[in-house]
Image: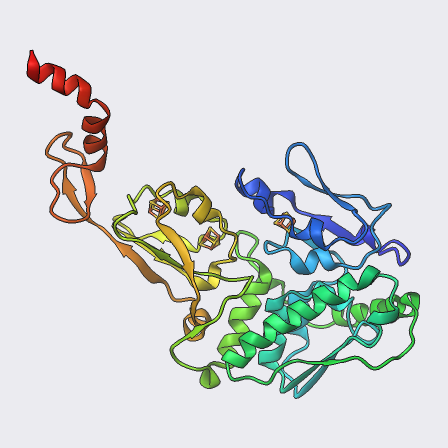
Length: 349
Ligand code: SF4
Ligand code: SF4
Ligand code: SF4
């Protein structure tokens, strides 16, 4: 890593970006998080980084739901694992990691689940030249607040923010960070945990492990909360025509068919709240609610969102998802409606 230009250590994996995943996806989280307009979009909707503008704050990494942007010298998910399970942990750019903005809400939740107390040291943010207009500190605080809402629902101690006025230059902070990353790298490798074929972001794999570690203390039943990084989906039985578009486009395979395609299964742990399923569903049958079962997340259990009963259409002889007692499929019904003039003409002849 070049210390003076940490942008050189940011890698973009364009195919993971939601904008590439689905043409109507308008995710702009990384672009909005960047205070110096270093992130842009190419005409082919690919995210690009101008390393001459980038100041290396890493806020884009912490906000990306798909881990499209990665920091080669610091992987926050690996940091969570390597920090182990300790009593107290202090997260600070001057001690053991990059700017706190590199941690997404899931990383912070995982740390909160693994430690009795986590102190998020934001004492340098006020003087840091990477915190332009206070925006980076705002992003960090948003992630901490969201993590705390989750931890509160999970009956776990909340993350604490400390804002003492210490002085440390950005250069000093980066030097101490690099020293500590090298120490981290010499520790055990956790590569085996991460399957390159897995479509799930690494932070989510680590979150699941962290929830499992706390399983005995997690509350049973559903909590009513909305989070930006995860959604709980539901499908309206009457409107869903079992087209399978939501399954086909879901980037993390959170939605799946069962073996005979009569049921749509949903694994909440895999959902990154990207909204692509809502966008592609023509009858607008799929939506989100604010119910989340934390124990279900720990075991990555699948729920049945909808179960269809199939009948053979008496007109076209193709099977269709029956909603009541109808004997004709929706396609034949709409065909008759669309050509009602012709049928009336034929009757009158
Ligand atoms: S935040 Fe991630 S998914 Fe969203 S536009 Fe940026 S790179 Fe793509
Ligand atoms: S929820 Fe919508 S997109 Fe998914 S199968 Fe049903 S109709 Fe198709
Ligand atoms: S279930 Fe929907 S919102 Fe969740 S990851 Fe899949 S497409 Fe995105």
